[in-house]
Length: 386
Ligand code: RFL
Ligand code: PHB
Image 1 (cartoon, rainbow, N blue to C red):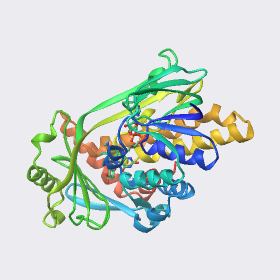
Image 2: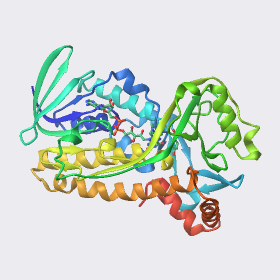
Image 3: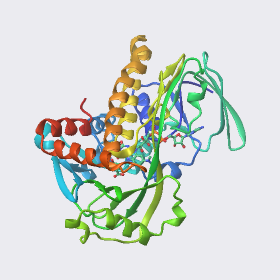
Image 4: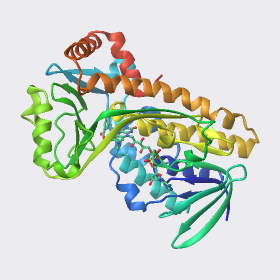
């Protein structure tokens, strides 16, 4: 088999890249190790930046997003048991959209099925045999298949294999693991607030989010040693209740969970994002802690950039954009890391944190709430405007 671009990983990054390439008549194949159902049902991101919404609409999958996505003109930060509003619309004249990653994935899968794109689900034992003249081997339905391509793109997330093919003496890895995790619960209950609330409380961090007017997504900070089996729904709700600000905690609607999971928090960057004919995009190249709601947005921004570079290469015979891809993306990646790390550090309680640091954080937040300049800065970062 031959193709122009071989994409490893069929999460949102791989799917969008395939769609953008196919729309531009650039032949491509996706190899995904899991089933379509597994990929489609992974509960993750919920917030899309305005730039991401534009990318998805331009890719031709904006119809359901426009109809079902909920526009949020602001979000709340709660500390010292008070709730403060950040009005992004007023401050920075823009909004974010609540639309789950599951929905983005479904829209991409439906569109790709309509245009007969080539995806191998349950592709196992992927081996990259040559990176200069890309050649790949994998197993599918117990058969060995070989593919020759011009380029390989790793959209295979943090646990993927593609990045391993960038030699050790070329790549630089920056990584930080946090000593706490997020325990998330999804339920068909009315969200406690019409807009998100990021909470810093003596019990730790909490986040009230949503997927629709009747479906809530909540998170609480937990130790990274916790096991999901030890968290009954009741235990989750009790701990969330303790984390909520007093004014609203008694309006919390509880119910059975649809999904519950623990996410380890991590910051990670690999440089450069390409080597010879291999390119990396999305979580394969960088992970941000979820506090700023940036991972999916950053991933789709990479893919938008890379698809444009491939368009220039295949249709205008220009290598310029491909050569600049890593540098261009990394500039946004580091700005996003900076914001995500600051927001995470400010809103979480670190184990062994001294009371001086705790007080400094509260004062920093108080300063922010009282300063329009700082609020505008925060609004722009949350909107993805750097
Ligand atoms: P993914 O989604 O991890 O997909 C990678 C795909 O590659 C496949 N794969 C392989 N396939 C073939 N061979 C191999 N050897 C392979 N190894 C892996 C995997 O099966 C998978 O299908 O990466 P991608 O596409 O780059 O997408 C990134 C996003 O999923 C991620 O950044 C976001 O979910 C992060 N994130 C959020 N991002 C936002 O922009 N806004 C949010 O509100 C937001 N909330 C979140 C989040 C992530 C969270 N977790 C789970 C850490 C909330 C949470 C709790
Ligand atoms: C979510 O709804 O899952 C969500 C929202 C905001 C975040 C992270 C996750 O910062």
